[in-house]
Figure 1 (cartoon, one colour):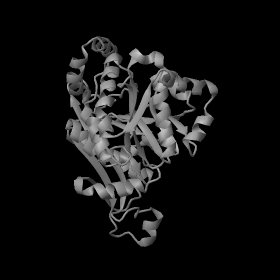
Figure 2: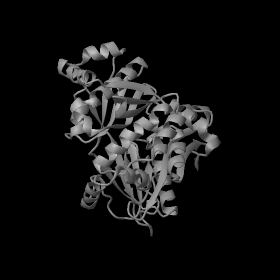
Figure 3: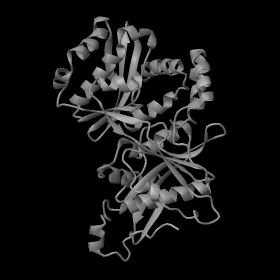
Figure 4: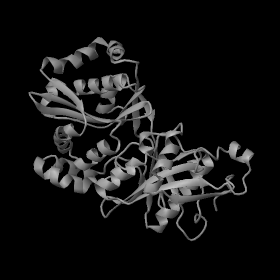
Length: 386
């Protein structure tokens, strides 16, 4: 059985639409919160792909708890006494698996809590939920380590139910760049070689634009080409549209053009002092012009001028090409703490490398006509959590 926790009284329930404000109030006031903890991602993911969501909230009950104890344990972070949250999305497919993910398609999400006891309660609740809906795997994508995750115990581990086994992924990092106070200072901080590379697409006649929904089609035109060439099914355009609508105050599209045609594009969205780049693409036909250099330069300039203090280039594998590209801008690796929990008793696979059959599928996909990948891609991509 789980060890006795120090929380004297609490309840865990799934948040609904009416809980959006209290959820976000908790997130906005938590020092470890990230963009991916915002309640709006529930609307983005469900609205795009229809996946079931379970947004767990642990709420302290004040019954029998004196004021001194509440202060000592930080019971009252918000008026409703929320002590922790865990957003979960249910992905189920005969090929790609049956799992609860926090959060799919993104680098983070995971648990946000006031203490390790709250973390353990939320993980235990996630395990109970998984078993009740027939899920055999839980993926938690956290940007900080879950204290004592390897030592957690769960109801059923000593009984008839299969034991829960936990593995940690360690192959991915975030690439973060600390920003100066202005775009002018940023440009001066770059080495001469980098400034020369940024200037190349300008000499080739490339231009750029920053905007919102009016640039979505231009963004997606490049995105579809890039994903096809990489051998990956493309996300639905609705996913980006929902991001731009739900997080309209902090989301922008950046596009690089050559002779009026989009050749590189990115979507950025911010939270607190961090601007993130979840999706960026370029048309490899124009690689000799280095449009990516202009694209990233514009994103970084925008981040500085909007008052962000850090730019998150997104997930990379150390040593690979994208890692080195981001490193040249001065970005520094920060570990991602991704946990895999198996509720079926089998040891979970911590490695997120594609199996050989998927590598073959990727090669075949990259040969398909663009119109086919644009039509079929979202129907497949919705089931792939990475």
